[in-house]
Image 1 (cartoon, rainbow, N blue to C red):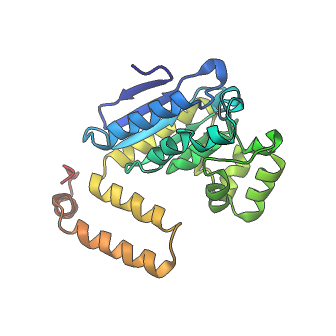
Image 2 (spheres, rainbow, N blue to C red):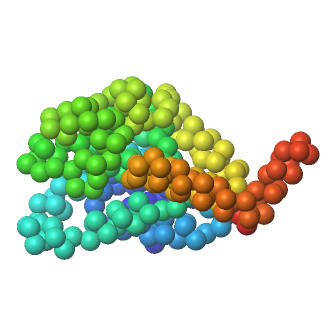
Image 3 (cartoon, rainbow, N blue to C red):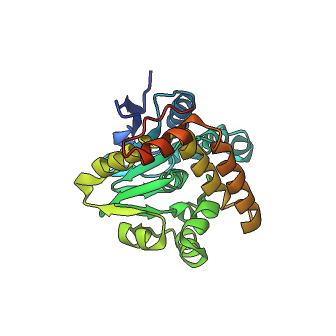
Length: 257
C-alpha cells in the first residue's frame, strides 16, 4: 500500500504517479522517496509501462525535502542516510519520465524535476535550490545537474542565493522544455508521454540512455556509444516493423522486441 503516492497505469502504457503529501506541500521525506523508487523499480520491468508522468498538485510539485526529518540527523546520521541510495534508483530508471510541474519545485523537488527527462511546467511554477538559507547545500544532485541544465552563472546564482526562478526563466535556460497554463500542465504532460509510449520501446530506452551519457562523456566517446546503440537496434523486430510500416504507409505495431 502506498501512503504518499497516487498511481494509475493508463491503457496507453503511461504510468501516472502523483506525489501526495498535500499537508506538507509534497515535501520529499524518506518514506515518499522509498515508495517512488519502489514504484519505478516495478515499472522498469513491467512491459505494460512505456513512459511515466510524475506530478504534484496545483500548489506544489514538491516544496523540498522534509526539514524536520533532516533536523534529527547529525553527521553520522547523514552518512548512513538511505536517501542517496533511493535517489540513485530513481536516476537509474530506464524509461522516459515526464515531470508535470505546477507551483513550487524547491530543493529536493527541483532535484526530482532534474531526474525527469522532459519537464512540462505551468506558468505559475517556481524552481529553486534554497538549501543555502539553512546553512547547507543541495545534496541530491542539485549542484551537478543544475549547472548542466542551466549553465554555470545561473546555477551558481540559484545555489548561492537560494532564490527561485520563474517558469519562464527556467524554460529560457533549458530546465523546462515547454510552458502551459497551470490547469493544462498535467494534460500536456500526459499527451507528451502518450506520444513517447507509441514509439518502439527498445529504441526509446536506448535513446534515453545515449542522451544521458552525453552529459557524462566527451563527444567522440558519445558518438561511438550512439553508433553501437544504433547498430544494436538493427537486430530488433520493432526496427523492421517501423521500416515496413513507413513503406506501407500504416501505423507501426511495436512489440518491444
